[in-house]
Amino acid sequence: MELYIIRHGQSTNNALGTPVGRTFDPGLTDIGVRQADVLAAHLANGSCPESQYEQREGYHLDHVYCSAMQRALLTARPVGAALGLKPEVWVDIHEQGGLYLDGDGGEPVGYPGLMRGQIQADYPDYVLPDAVTEEGWWNRGFETVAGATGRAIAIADSLVERAKNGHERIALISHGMFVNLLLKALFNQLPTPTTYYHHYNTGITRLDIRQDGFIVLRYLNRTHHLTPDLITY
Image (cartoon, rainbow, N blue to C red; front, side, top):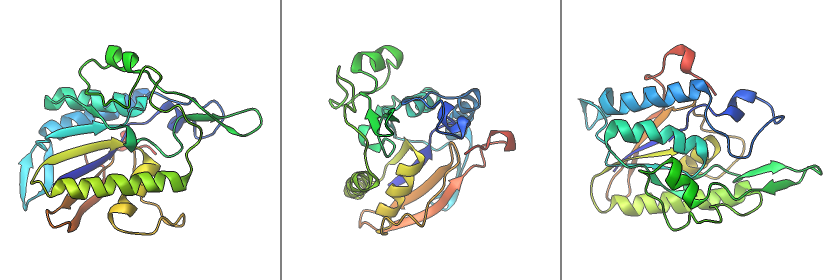
């Protein structure tokens, strides 16, 4: 398996740089939209480095997965269009914490997220799992780092198991903290808060997962598709 782990484009919360004024399910900034468009063009036609020891034009992905958070859904839209693929929502690759805002007393307040009908109306080509319902897809409170770590371990295990079935190229459009936890899970590292695998917006990490479970890191947080003005946190 060629696994491409990609962070979403810049969100409105990313651009704030402060907890003040945040929304529980932010969309993309104008820069984030441009990043997503550039990412899509790169995945479709750009030079894919370290492709089984040869260069190829375009990444030739078989599947594009994204979380059900709006910033990931919006990033996946031009990617799917450029590649001729239907983005597939994978609920469990959402950001740590889930959908929440701090309440008046400082305690996190959870929100349900987009409902199935809303996603179908706004993203009609997307493939949705049963976990996305008319009650939303979150409907919980705040998810701890420990909870997200367990989720990352489960995703890592499922990817390694899936790689046993043969070669495929898949992309996960996910989120900064969860990508950090997923990489630690894939590398069998302890979930220590003193180390962090940082990704810029639409930064790309590639891992090759062999059928025997051996994992090779090809590159981390690659941003060659972005011009300097499009590199954001």
